[in-house]
Amino acid sequence: MRSILARVLVFASCFATILSGQTASQSVPKDHLTVEQKFREAQLKSDADAMAAILTDDFIRSPQSLPETSKIQYVEAIRSRKQKYVGINVHEARYRV
Image (tube, rainbow, N blue to C red; front, side, top):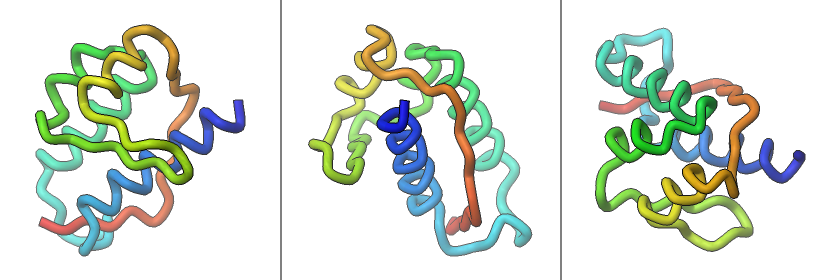
């Protein structure tokens, strides 16, 4: 359970880092926030098809102390239930357009 939570936090950090540069209180395009919310919902629902539609083909997931994962590998891990999210907490998100 701790491992899953750690992965969730790492992913959320990576996602926030990708969009880093502005604080959430600053002007962030609504479409960015909408896609981020849809992605979190897809993660929590284990909706691999929705995740695959949102992620780019060149997506690489780089969790700490684990090997990198391609989009195909990541989506398949969700689809096969090898990885499941039970909660996602985002702290101090920063966005860069």
